Length: 290
Image (cartoon, rainbow, N blue to C red; front, side):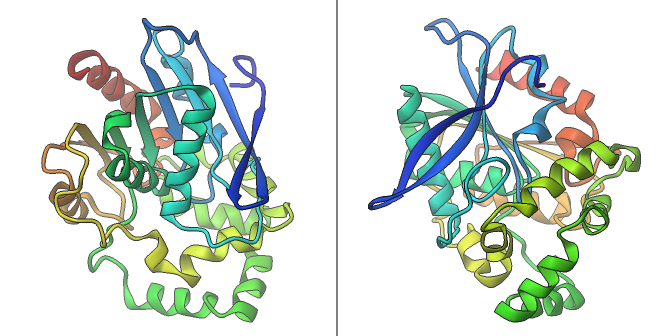
């Protein structure tokens, strides 16, 4: 993807007199004849995680990809990370780019952030495409996982655990369960996910979901939410953390208008795990629904 765009940055005042440098990339022409797609990565991810998707859309669309504050190449200040913060960032970024209407394509936490933004700014969103979005978990978390997250929520234990996992071996162990196609978890992907963990402040952003899980939940939104425009759920059939048969109905309570498509032989990182099928489905949605 580097041959299509280089890193760009904008300075976002996320709190009064506090700014963070936010990384993004831009592809394709921006004019009145093209719709804008904004790709938003998931927890622990970065805009490079879309590298097998974006090239399929740059000829027809104006494409943007952004690193959420605290992740990827964006700065990682000691701030209260939460979906509402990410939604605010999306809004400020669109304002910075002078974009009044956007199609949001979000994966996992990026999908939850996009939905939160759409709920608060329904007129700014032309469509939502959510790939295995997080934010609604039901009873899917097993007791061992709950115990683990309660442990790393402790500041001292959490930082020790972070240090233990913030390396290629730990990253590999974290990524493998999110892929059906294990060959996709190669050295390049592992390095992409490991590099931001070395940045100053990474411990604050990466431990936030375990320390304040309610800040990353969509449970508090009204059902249905304020966003009533077009919405689509694309899910990996083999996602054991967020199984589609349990989670899709919950999202359709928030988004009754949302169509759902399940991709076989794909797990949580569906857009990368089964990129050709995901791209084909996204192309179909964009061509026939917008």
